[in-house]
Each structure stands twice: as structure tokens, then as C-alpha cells.
Length: 274
Image (cartoon, rainbow, N blue to C red; front, side, top):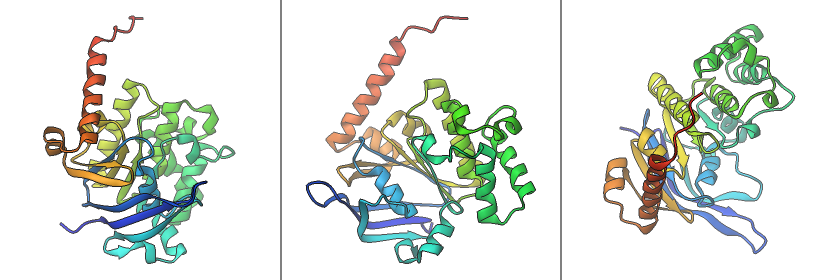
């Protein structure tokens, strides 16, 4: 199957106080339509920079210095800024690690989703608002019309996470990049968000690039996994292959950490009944 997204020999340079350094180097990845690929590694290994490079929203201190990022065969790095922005948010969407960074604090949740719809699809105000309310209900927010009128600071962490997912899905992207979608949530909310991501991917035939350090999340959601360390891909393959035949010490350490978390969960005291 032709790749939806193909990254070839990507290198991202980061300006530091000690001078420039390569934060991502020689990275190769491919993602097929409708596929879920997990990019796994410890904090600071270059996972998020890779995602931001795909979307063309790298921070000022970072720049792509080599490689290609092919979207349906077109190199995104060669597109003019206007064409690149038109793709971001419409065909490619990002769900941020920290929901607060995705929202404008002076606009309600519904206004922000509706604004994105109007910008990318040309919807009328009325149609965009109705679609925003529908999306909020689709991601599991009770009384979505009421939540649409709330400001980000009036929402809980789980509600903001759902709102951000609704905003990312608004324009029907072919690829959603989910950056640590469950890292700040408790276990019940983690399971709910993972279920929402799985359902959204299946219902929309949408590809999902899952960025995480948690192999438990990978086991639940992904079909393939790529393990990253210090800006490089160490190994990649199906989740079963990598989990059962991990070759690199970094992957083995991540698997041991996952096992330790599972054991702690088995021995954790039960929550008191109400």
C-alpha cells in the first residue's frame, strides 16, 4: 500500500547555548492510510520535534537541515508556507501533550472549534457552531452545548483533553498526531481517551501517529511501533515483534518499566468504596 506519510533521512537541528546540535538524525518512518504507528522513547529523544517538523510548526530554535517529509508523495518541505498551513489542521492534525497550549483562553471551546471549521471548510457561523457542539458530544462530553459555551479554564483536565480531540478531528484529518494523549490523566480517564482515539481512527479510517513513552498505551492502541533514542530510530516493526524480540537495550528497559508498572498496579490497594 502507498504510504500516506513517509519520512526519509530527516535531520532536525536545535540551537543551544553550546551551539547547534542534531536533535533528530537520519530518521525514516512510513505510515499507511488508516494505520496506527507508535513513536516511543524517553522524554527529550526527539519524538515531539519529529511531529512538529511534519506539521511545519517547529519552534524558532529548531530547523530541518536534511531529509524529506512526503505527504501523499509530495514533499511538505518544498511547499510554500500558505499551502503548508492549508494542510495543517485539515488533512494533518495535532493533539497536544498539554491541552492548555492548544486553546485561546479568551474564546469559548465552541468558538475555537467553530473558528477552525470556518477557516478550513468555509462553513457558515451557524453550521460551524452546530458541528462544534456535535463533535463535543461525539468525544463524550455530557451536555455538549453547555460545554461549548465554557472557557478553557472552566474545564477539568479530562474535559480539556476531550475538547482538544474534538478540535483536532473537526475538519476530518487523514492523519492525527497524538502527543502523549494520556500522560496527565488518571487510569480511568486514560482508558476513555484511548478508546476515543481508537474509535475515531476506525470510524474515519484515519491514520494515527501516537507519540508516547508508555508501552502499555502502545500495546492497547498501536499496530506498529518505532523506538527512538537520542534522535534516532533504534528498531521498528509490529508491536508483537518488537515486544517479544526487542533487540536494543533501550527497548528492553522500556519493556521492563512497563512490567514494573503492571506489577505495581496489581498490588495497589483498592480504592475505598463510596
